[in-house]
Image: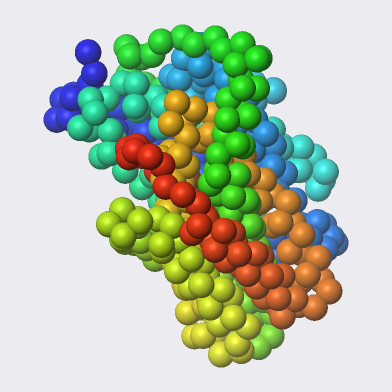
Length: 418
């Protein structure tokens, strides 16, 4: 029997998903505010420093595809618990702790390359959460309660991504980056224990063992759709803009004429709150007026925000980052819900592919933006992001002409707080 709202089981599930979202994105992005520190300490370029983020999100993108297939066979709950623990290499801790331990181990590694290995393993280990969280909630929760439960998971993801970055920046300023990452790992361990203790055992899951031929047929149907491949392309380039801006803004704000410290730069990540509001607001408008009619609007806002960041006055730079954040989350809200609507019977596979391209954009384009920074400083970054934004606008124009489905299909937006 599905779990109904206002029951002890529902409260446990909601709390567990809130904690899972928080831990996943705090662990995944905790190194982002530290890129200037890595560049200075290890004598590497900003593009090389960005690998501390890209070598977590890239492997995560690939692992999501495998995690979704495994989850269809063995169950969503065990995959999620394993996602917070499968990468334990040196310890005998329970599966619910290990991914956080990997992040804690990163704080103790002596060299840059070993640090990158730990980041790669962390990304792979964490893939099971974003890959199956939505499907787990849909299987276990009463239909009327799916939205609120998903909302808590998304809220936890956003808070974790923001708090992880900000917390690391503040602790780094006073105690150093190794202590900051170790503290993030310790927090993740606690969160993983709480998650494993609270998340209910699956009651609605039915094992599915699709053949390779069925999987290939699903991929063919997805890429034959008039909108889905374009939505994947949009996810790739939009996430590339968003991550590039946040990857390299720390380098800019630490340099003259600003000279900001770690805590002040970390405070920039509080702008994620703007994204939380814009995603809900734009998603509501899209539901009323139609996705294809307004998808271009948040993209235009994102491009305008990139242009504002090219200004010199600090208030305009911060305003530009806020506008980029609002535009990105608004566009992501539309695109992710659109995928669920178009995919019909292939929703799980389509969702996994969307997240694959989403995190691939974070990894590939996020590091490519470092080349633009090394070549021309922030004007190079702004130009790089502007080109990507124009490409996204072209994709939006293409999507505006896609014929609608012959009948309505309900959906839940894909959860991510990248």
